[in-house]
Length: 304
Image (tube, rainbow, N blue to C red; front, side):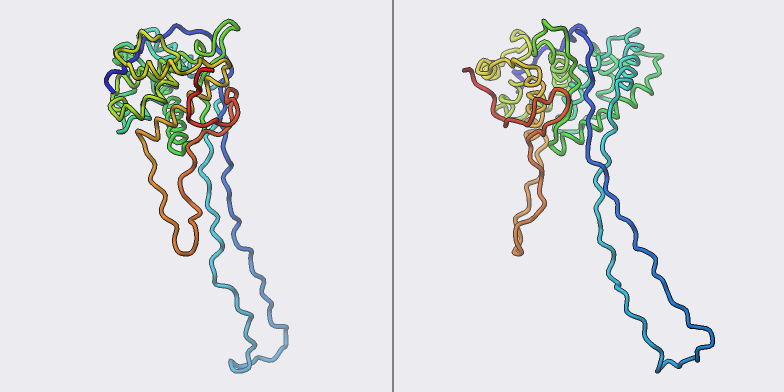
């Protein structure tokens, strides 16, 4: 889909807000079998031979029931964590033009959605320098890398499981529209798809709808010769609430994952009845400060 190349210019920072704090189920654990008690022969009791020895009651040799452990939930991001992340990015900003926190989040999603894995060595320099992708010399970014990799792993797992994630979108002043508020996140996503064009090279007919839900927040002049995409965007109504705009980011990301990272089809049911496993639903669940409630399905809203 080479025609759809949005501008990846980094917007100016617009403000700060409350960070999303992802949560997950606690891991389950099973207790081991209890100790068995044994009775000793009373003192002075006559000894008996093998033929007359009383047999002990048989004990079950069946193994204890296996209780599967759920994956450990991602560690919630505190305000201090995000402040530390932004502080480390600010240190890099003295020598280059790094991504800010919201752009970083969208950028990571854009990298994860590539049909082929992108090496850390390829995408990491763009975090440090969003203009040229050249890591500045003399910068010790190890602490920053650890935090970024933590978020990358968290997002990758949520997308692989087709589960809700809380985009790092920060509320601005009261005059800012929902589109203005999510614009930095979308700009980071657009940068990733511009630098790594694998996603855009997939079937255009499958990409148009979810991309329109993201790129509707960009200036139409930033979309080069993307007639089908612009037509789809024209059919959408801009979100009136921030919750709706943020939910759309997640829904569009999971729809794109269905195209670039398809899940294996469920196995057919056996003779004994329907199989209880299978992939999870691709719709987002409710959650997060800007979740907007349960997912309303993948179809974009048309004009009223």
